[in-house]
Amino acid sequence: MLFFLIFLGIPLAVYLMFVVSPFAQSFYYSLTNWSGLSPSMDFIGLANYQRIFDDPVFWKSLRNNLALLVALPTITIVLAFALAVMVTIGGSTHGGVRGVRGAGFYRVVSFFPYAIPAVITGILFNFIYHPGGGLLNGFLNLLLKPLNAVLGIVGAEPMRDVGTAWLGDQRFALAAVGFAIIWTFVGFYMVLFVAGIKSIPQEVLEAARIDGSGRLRTSVQIVAPMVRDNISTALVYMGIFALDAFTFVSVMTPNGGTDNSTKVVSLHLYQTAFRDGRFGEASAMGVIMALVTMLVAVIVIGLGRSKKEKR
Image (cartoon, rainbow, N blue to C red; front, top):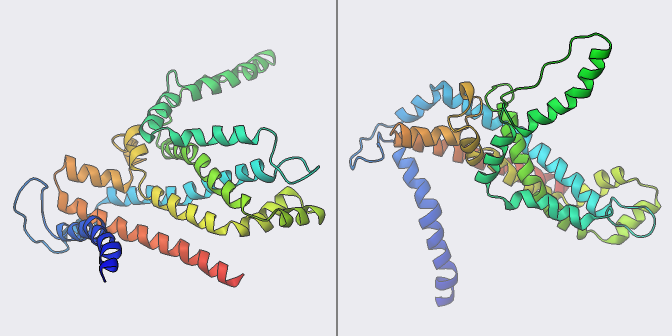
């Protein structure tokens, strides 16, 4: 009995205190008009939830989160898986199964962006996207020089220099933030997939090569199903991050971009609580997003299990 009290009771108490209790408190605060500073609060029922559902900014923020939820996991995992295949089985077909030449170097370089703090990454991409002297516009203008030279020879009007404000233009802002996030996480999930691929018996990969299976076919039909658990894990974590994305959005577009083009629910929640002093309403947003996040996790894990059982 003492063993169970120590090794099960203490972790359970810590979990209840730091995970369950804050969520329960947030739900309680979501039913009040608490300002965050006042010692008193009034019970107002579901009024905060009604206010949220009538708030167009919340729905715009939620749409941005859902756009990231579709794009970030898909692009990140596809790129990470492709890189993992390249550095593990993408090498020469002569001899044993191995990665491309310099695979170890590529692993280190690909993982490096993940080691940089997200705030620093956001600041770096702010400089890259700067409309005046940013690296992206400078690179595009460099590509335009030979094209304009050719246009000048044929007597056509040259193209104007690119001066796009990538984070200020609502057509590109969310994609620009998303690219910074993808750049950060691709290397991390590449390492995760490399570990999964390394656990595949070499005999299986050798047999596929002897049967004439190319790299693409081997990757899709053999490697991907055998690292399905790793892919499911990556989908869950990237999905959860896409429903947050607070750090990158708040650093790169502190006010949520032009016409709230990059505002996500977590940033809207933060501004509602600490700028507007409506902690009750912010707590209601937190409860809604917690439920959405759990729903996404359950769906992804459930799909992964059902496919695994069919096999």
